[in-house]
Length: 155
View 1 (cartoon, rainbow, N blue to C red):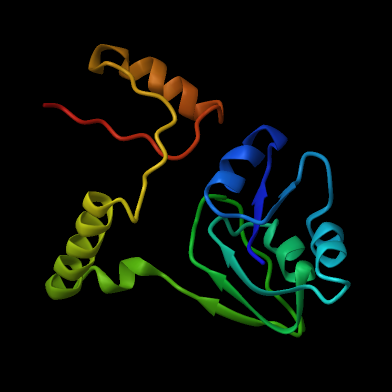
View 2 (cartoon, one colour; view 1 turned 180 degrees about the vertical axis):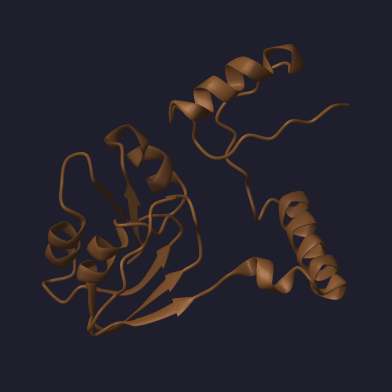
């Protein structure tokens, strides 16, 4: 059962539409408690942590003993505490390690391009700004009002 986690209850519908069976919103409930409640007390099998930082401790607590946490993002600039003796396998994935190989970059670009063209990968667009409004777009991002990252495209 895929469980989505968000900081804001208002984002729950978006995660459900993307395929989550249930959503845990940290502005209203504790991640570990909610995950254990939704898994009959066992905890989740696999966690994809795209944020890191101190919040990773909550994700470790939500993971069942023997489960796996894949740390693949860096959205929280604060240090990530050592997992200590958590009975969880932590896989530290850093995609930029692979970016030095041009053939890997070409394969990844082809995969992403095909996925978007075929509709298998659907980027979430929060809001579109005209180039003249790039400052307003940055302010929206800086205040955490965005859904995703900012991209500036000139045609």
